[in-house]
Amino acid sequence: MLPMIQREITEKHGWATEEEVLDYYSIGQTTPGIIAINTATFIGYKKSGIAGALAATLGMVSPSLIIITALSSLIIAYRDNEYVTKALKGIQGAVVALVAVSIVKMGKKAFTAVSAYILGILGFLFLFVLKLPTYAIVLGTIIISLAYLFITTRGRR
Image (cartoon, rainbow, N blue to C red; front, side, top):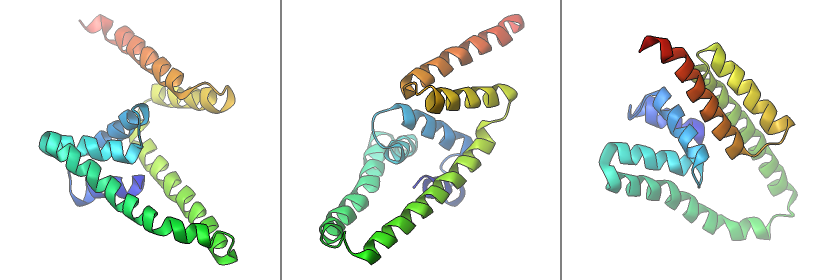
């Protein structure tokens, strides 16, 4: 959903810039809930306040809820079917590709300085090698970023 959301928000409707969407994704990662719903809620709020946030949230949740409810009994009934199993495996591959494209596209916008690359690499290592919890990495990155900002702007006051 992330590539589709990004395309709809930035290219098709112009509701936000790619940088803003990246910020929404970042905030959406740190708040409870699904990132796509959180992002839609932020965009809805930006466009029309509380009513927009509610409409955007319902607009994101309703179609999936209806489709999943309708299809769940069919999937359960046919989960042992060879064709259904192969179709679901194919869908998994497509999802991986879509997420990879989205990551690369967002990465081009997010990594604009050497410090961003360093933080990105450290975040990856801390998450996947040291297995630190996500919230610890986010808090650490915030602290490091604020310290860096303080140090680099201290002489400009």
